[in-house]
Length: 192
Image (cartoon, rainbow, N blue to C red; front, side, top):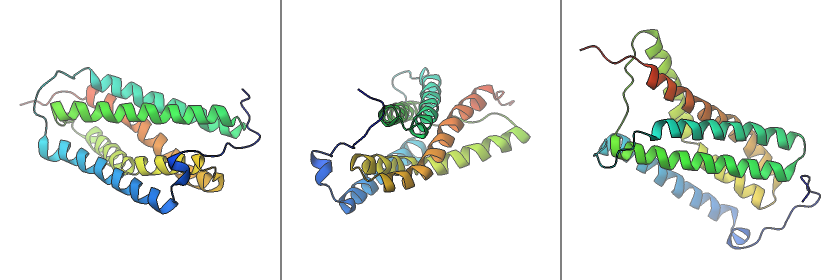
């Protein structure tokens, strides 16, 4: 199989028959449901015990780092016109980010929120990174799904427009996810 595509494949199946409008509605409902569930876990539920998932934060950081690496490799592949390689790398980045999200939700469902213990200027830096990470991460699911949808539908002009926004945001969220992990783990415990 060549890494360069000469003619795009025709989409098949249910997605091929889906209108853009139907996809946008589905995407909005799915994204809103994911955000609502996340808000429920972090704001309302606040952890309830259960399985010991303390191993998850380093695994989640590794998944974020993997997603970031795959995103950069996918960007390089498309710049080199290696379309098939690009496709596999971007799908792999999506899988890594999806596994991260499942792990993140599971960890916080059981253990609740993790508090930053640091003080002084680093505390301000931490919260600036965290707030930008949270705000931008809310758009990753709908943007990534939209980018994949247009690629699947072989509407590469729209795919490229969406991907120009999606890639830097997704990369920022993945990298800052790793940074937040290390900032949380490196913060000294609070002094009573």
